[in-house]
Image 1 (cartoon, rainbow, N blue to C red):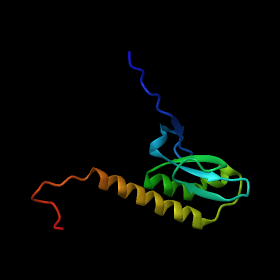
Image 2 (image 1 turned 90 degrees about the vertical axis):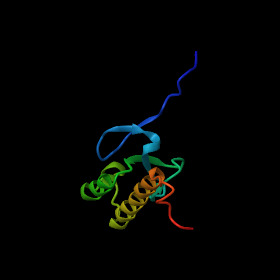
Image 3 (image 1 turned 180 degrees about the horizontal axis):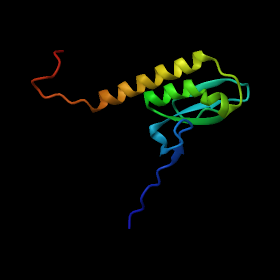
Image 4 (image 1 turned 180 degrees about the vertical axis):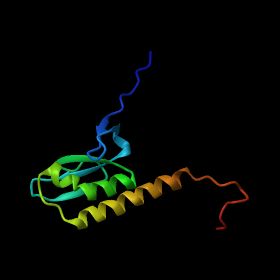
Length: 108
């Protein structure tokens, strides 16, 4: 009998919904008080997760979610950087699913 591999779940701090870990983006807060986007999910420090959706990134800025989660004051520039990065990831996911027929393929 084959064992099924367990998929780790994490909760988004914006929507409070659980998603598979690969569908989330980790935000790390280290001991020096620096906050950063952690694309690998392995950076040192406390982590909080956000779903890779543009509306969640906008809500995070409106509600200042990471200020509350990490109990510190975070600059607006970080939220803008986060929104841009999430938009980039969303666009990459769209490109990964695009398929062309031979007639529609772009010229090289």
